[in-house]
Image (cartoon, rainbow, N blue to C red; front, side):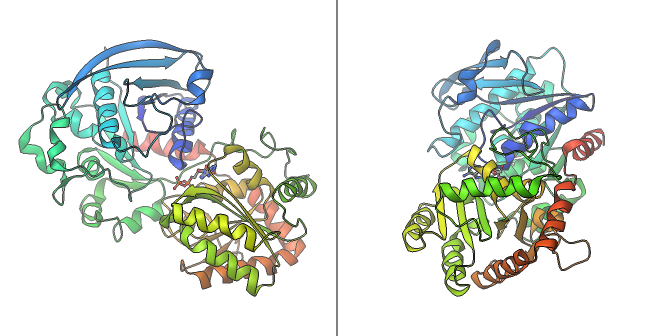
Amino acid sequence: MEILHVSAECYPVAKAGGLGDVVGALPKYQNKLGHIAKVVMPMYRTKFLYEHEFEVVHKGAFGMANYWLDYTIIKQVNNSLGFDLYLVDIFGLLDREKIYGYGDDTERFTAFQIAVVDWVSKWKHHPDVINVHDHHTALIPFIMKHCFIYRNLSSVKTILTIHNAQYQGWMDWNKSNYLPEWDKWKWGMLDWEKNINPLASGIKCAEKVNTVSPGYLGELMHEANGLEKLFEYERGKCFGILNGIDNEVWNPKTDAFLEYVYDIDDYKEKKAANKKILCDQFNLDESKPLIVFIGRLVGEKAADLLPAVIGDSIYYMEGKMNFLILGSGDKAVEFQLENLQNQFFGYYNSMIGYNEKLSHQMYAGADFLLMPSRVEPCGLNQIYALRYGTIPIVRRTGGLKDTVKDFGEPGGFGICFDIASVGDICNAIHRAIELYQQKDKVNKIRKHIMKIDHSWEKSAQIYINLYNS
Ligand code: ADP
C-alpha cells in the first residue's frame, strides 16, 4: 500500500511537539511492515535542510486569491529517515526559520496544502491513502473532492489524524477565495459556526478520522473546543489509535544525547550519574527527588499552575524536592517561572526555550516527570519517561489515562490524580516524595516501566488496518 503523510512537522526535520515525533516515526514503521509510506511537509529554513542533500523532483504553480504562486518539490537524496521525504518550497511563504507563529500562517498553510494537492494531481499514479495530520493539512480532503481542477483525485482515500483538536485553523469566510475554484453547493463542508474551519472540514470530508488515543476520542464528544456535536455526529468514522514511540530515537541504551547510557541492568548507577550532571548544571541537590516538567507552557498543559505548585510544594513540604522545568509558551508563565529562580535558588531551576538534547537528559536524569495537563490528546512525554525509568505524575485525562496506572492500583506504576488544581498537584507531589523514600519499591517500579512496550510496531499496523477498512 502506498501512503502519503502530509504534515507541518516531522522529526528531525522540524518539530514543535508530539506531531513531529509521530510523523517522524509512523511512516518508518509502516515501511518496515512492507508498505510504501512517504512524507511531504513545508520546506522551512531548518538545520536539517542545510545538512542534507536534496534534489528537485517537481515544479509547479497555482493561483491563490490574487496571487500566482510558484512551488518546488524537493526530495531528500539518501533517505536517511527510513522513508521518502519531500519538502514544498514556496518562496517567501514557507521558507522561514520557525514552523508556526507568523501573522500569515493561514496563507502559508493554505498555500502548502494547495501545492501538495497540485503536485499529487500530476503523479502518473495515485497513492492508496493520503493521511493528513491536524488542521494545517485538514483542507486537503475538501480540495481533492470539491475543487474542480483536482477532481481527478476525488476517489483517493483520505484519513485525518487529529493530534490536537484545540487548534482548528479558523479562517474568515472572506478568505474562501484562497481555495482553487470549488463547488459552491458544498460550502457546508467548509463551514463551522460561520467560519471556515479546516479541522471541521477535514472531519467532514475525510473517509476516516483518528485521534492519537482512545481516551481522547471519548473526551472529544463532550469537550472539543466547539466541535463536540460534529464528533458526536461523525462518531461512526472516528477511531482512537494510541501513539507509539520511536524506540530507536528514545532508547536509554543508545541515546547519543546522554553522558551515561543505561539499560535495565545498570540503570541505578547510570541514572544517578545522569542526575548528578543535571543537578550540578542547574544548582540542584542530587540527594533529593528531582521532579521535571518538559513541554509547551500553555493552558492545555496547566503550565499556569506550575509557579504556585512549585512555590507551595517547596514551602509546605520544606524543600524536600527539586524542580527543573524546560519549556516555552505563554510569556506571562515564562516570566513567572524565570522569576522563581531567585526565590527558590537551590531547589528549583528552569530553562525557557526549546532544547531537544536537554529534554533527553531530563527524561534520563529525573526521578519523576510531572504532567498535570488539562487536555492531553496522547502525550508522549510520559511514555518517554517510562522508557527511561522515570516515574510519571499525571492527571487522569486523554492519553495519560490510557498509558499510566497509579501505583496504588494492582499492576500500577505511576502517580495519578484527577483535578488540575494546585492542591491536587501538590498532593500528588507529596505522594511522590513519600514513594521516593521507599527505595525497593521505586526500583521495582523503575524496572517494570522500562520494560513496558510502547513501540510503534503495533500501532503502525492498526493504522494500516484503518486504511484497509
Ligand atoms: P504536545 O505535542 O501537545 O506538545 P506531546 O507530549 O505529544 O505534547 O509531545 C511533546 C514532545 O515535544 C516531546 O517529544 C517533548 O519532549 C517535546 N518538547 C516539548 N517542549 C519541549 C522543549 N521546550 N524542549 C525540547 N523538547 C520539547
